[in-house]
Image (cartoon, rainbow over all chains, first blue to last red; front, top):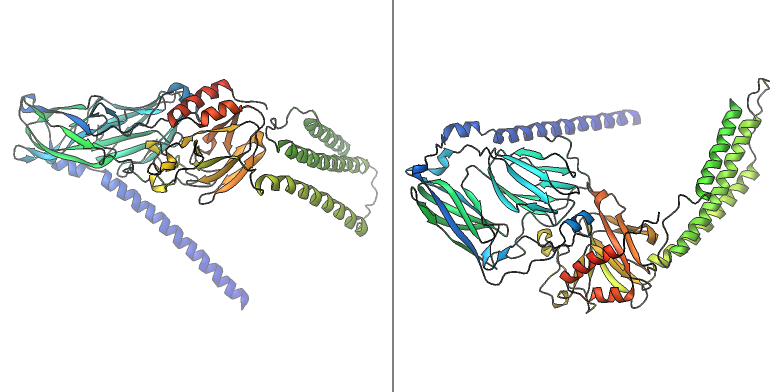
Length: 301
Length: 282
């Protein structure tokens, strides 16, 4: 009696194990399909009109990003835990809000939508730039702090430091990767397949390190420089919704701008201290990494 | 062949004992007040265990030598052992180990289970993947309030210090532990994410930092210098990189440092790290 019940339980357990295994496998297959499905944008691209540049019909958008109110104090970064960092960058400060005078640096300004003549801007496709973008780890911080790349543009991630870094590329729509890069190591080369604003990049070894990479389906973007200025060139004449994005104000400020052929449209943005409060951080500061991660498994390198 | 094995056993035993006796491979120097007690306890344990080890191995070698196959086949003799002898050596072994454990417990208890001496410096240790953060209360000796929702690595607020709390104004948070020589210090360990473990080999203790718990431990560093802090609990992919340094400073330098603002504190620590190079007393 006992032995037959035991046999039944063992059989039941084995059957449940098999079921669980099958379920896990099939879900993986689904995931892969989903990822590939949304990754393959060729059908969508086929409906888009490839944009042919015609300088006579293009203008530019320029402007300045200001910061209203007293500039927040930049927190000093102690890098003593990694002596290489401490000697390479002895006077490091937080880069979350960089204000020079009343001008705000590191604001990404990009076209969100618009109309080119009668046609929707989103009905065009734009060939990716052939110039690779670079994300450098230099002095134990990311250079540049904020940048945008085009879909399928090459992104070279470089380590110029004499210490090892770890690139935790926290994408939601693109390939998420978490990869170490030693000193003198070869660049990590990526082409991001989907538009995504904005991917936070972290270093698991140096928690202060943070960069933001936007992936856009077109080349009409710029990041405000130290004097708060930005310039977007070669914009087809039309009317656009322009977004100014800051890492502390993820929704950003939206403005409408009209670009005329050969003209230079000017659009200025202004952020204030309330918009860029320290609490407005991305991604949940308390997110815990799993105790053991195996990034080498099932990842493309 | 059997006798060769006996010789091999004796040689290996001799080599093993020599490795300890030669003193080439030993702990780094103990630099805390309780360190010598720990070392004494360890030494006592290793002498007792070492004598037992050597005696057992020599006896094993003797048996192998004495009863090696010399080609003169004799009938094997079976023995069921001697119960009296077994009881005796079990009791002796138990007594030795219980005594060692009780002695060790006394040293351990003094470090972990007694209150820190009055007037001890207080440092909150907040571990995170993969960094140590040390929070000092500043000249007012009151820790500013911390709130988890304020934690933000990119704004360099690793521990979520609440700037709205007046007590937080003079607080400093750094990644190097700074202590005063010959003065007791109490660490209050916590973790932001997973379990970590605070370990400075020269201090002769490890203490887990557990999320949600304030674990207290106290010690008195005696020797000025710089020492490495390691994480002794596998805490994730970059666990091996979770390193920080501890500075033990003369009283005047320490007092000057802890009264400084955050920016000056960081700069001064960077200078002091160069002034007192890492103690590699291995």
